Image (cartoon, rainbow, N blue to C red; front, side, top):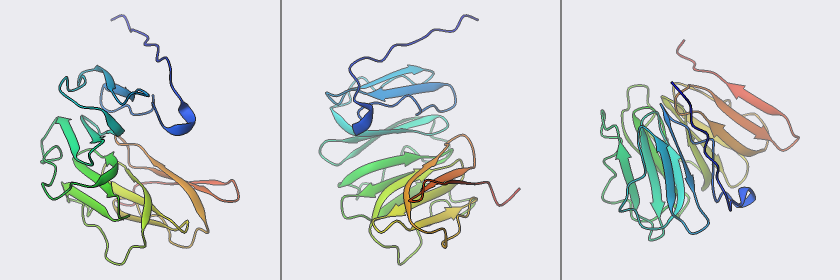
Length: 193
């Protein structure tokens, strides 16, 4: 089978305008400067999607934050991961795992829904205001405004890491990465294996 290469033009990588690392099961997507979403692979872009501010890909589903704060979702829906809670009207960021989804509200609080087999959708109480959220296959990772990291689900990130500046996770994998202020990167695997 011949593979096709795709060229993404007019991207401002420093402002998260497009991304090539949002690869799920067998698809990828990018957000353009105008806010449109371009997708290729098994789950193409929703053709009725208005301009968006942020996108995320799960193992086989996509999420997008529309400019009005609502979340659009499409793709595989085995555990209701594309059934966005109707109360979520102020999203600023989204993240997607295998069978769960997450959003960061404009207030800095997290909302998770769908599968909770490993606790990946059970947002802990008492979190500080968050600035970033990411999902592994069966886990959710969050970075607060003070550089603290919280995690719930199959991957557990220690709370005594020091100050973090960024987090990352793979939707089709159960590993989380944390970039620390001193430049070190720490990677944490699935604690259930």
